Image 1 (cartoon, each protein chain N blue to C red):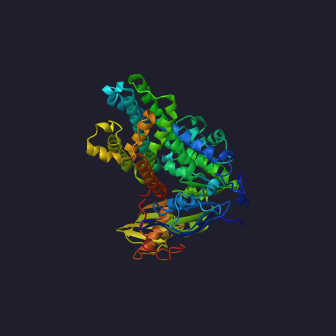
Image 2: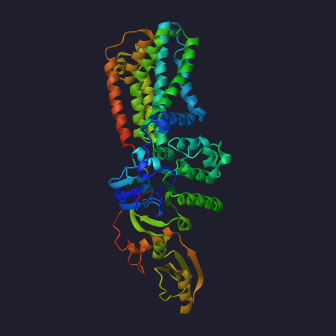
Length: 316
Length: 271
């Protein structure tokens, strides 16, 4: 196995007395498609900023292709999405692609990039005049302009409609199939399930879970069952919240739970099963780990058994 | 597993900044200069503000005055206002412009590309230089048509050099403001500094019209030293002994401040 493309070892970043990233250790080997999840303020952005050389760690090691990421040469194999709000509004689409392409030794020709991401007709438009979805597609396209070995995609499909999202997924899959390495952040469980081989969840600056998609899926209660009932027997939920006659049950297998509910014969009403985002599920789990006074404590999630220290949340 | 998606194997990540070629420093400088110029030029009001203000100053403060008919005095006045034009470019293009850019996510994004600070900064400097030159053109035209000002051809290069040297402390000041302050603070500080420095340095009214106390204070201002240098270059007037030390001290001080602010800058987004 060759050296990892990204290596973090005990990487910590503080802003004043706020710890945004707290001793994170993480390797991204070549060819992997990694999904990075976590609520806002969890440290995802800080992690990406360290890897892309925007910031330096307060302590610990961060390496990109075996070098410090703040050396420009280390970033020659990196492709990244800008935040969609960050495109210079007065520049034309083609000009923005040209500027980025100019930094790489062998960029994809601009026309080809625009064509591949469905922006061919918009080449002469100023980016300020693009719709949200068009900006998002341009932002993702920019990550691939330099034929990177590693693509960091920060929420690539937020705000896209279903078709556009699936087109982008195809592009990411094709890139990955050709051997490209991807680190992807997303709010959508569906997206991570569709793309990622490995899932890393960060919360409060720490890596909470790191495993294959299957491992992570079975480790978290990703279904939320709501029901009204005077009293319920123990249905084997991973977490149960009770508010008067309203019950909220978290489970990884809603079918089994509903079967048990019906089988128990307890009277109930307003049954509602929803697929929680992975983040919500993790929040439920971490919240349970925090307040052990809850009706049931979290189980089965590696990492949550260690008591969470009083790391202040980053205001971002 | 094949770790070679498109171009390179792990061992031959080509250092993008060395070795000339398609990604050489000069080419990147040209790339960033062009992009920045395009960005600025497409907001015409910004250009017009920078270009028109010094010329208006010339029309109000010099053209109607009796000394506009005196070649030496009119030339000196034009030189003063030229320095004012260069100074406002330094404080606004470098100061406010840099602070604004740093607050934008696009600037952060550019810093993730394989490019060091050099080409981006060089692009910025060239951009400012271009604006300074553009703002001088209407000024010189007005001076030539409407006053007795005259610059002998053999003094042209000397004057340009004097303007560049006189601009150094302003450049440092602008970059310090730009890299050290938030957008709002930068705008306020640039505005607060511009007029007192310009007036106190004798860029609007010649120092000969100053009361004694103001002339004494003025001697220690970077704008006054710069003004004396440029006026001396255009008219051959004597250079006061204080000019070079004052100019050098300010250039050094503002350079240190600018470099320190630049080093500490990681973008403005977390403060």
